[in-house]
Length: 108
Image 1 (tube, rainbow, N blue to C red):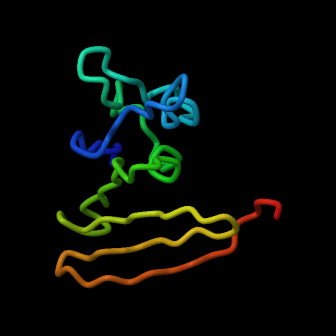
Image 2 (image 1 turned 45 degrees about the vertical axis):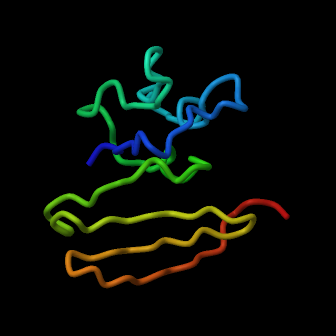
């Protein structure tokens, strides 16, 4: 499922010369709408769900919805990047929450 941008949370990475989601998207799919100054995916069908934009968004404005094979709406998977770990929050269709933390390969 392509990323969904919460327009209320997205600030277009005002402090950056280019939004972080745009910088990190390996498919060059994320960009900033020049009128709204909010990020969006310009070609959702080309997104391969790497979740790089979701992980790097400092505002938590980008969400990845799970495909129906994995969980019907409103199930979602939310990554939270830490210095040396990533924590995944999985919310199932019944609102049950599970969190999984893993050490990343980032150097100290």
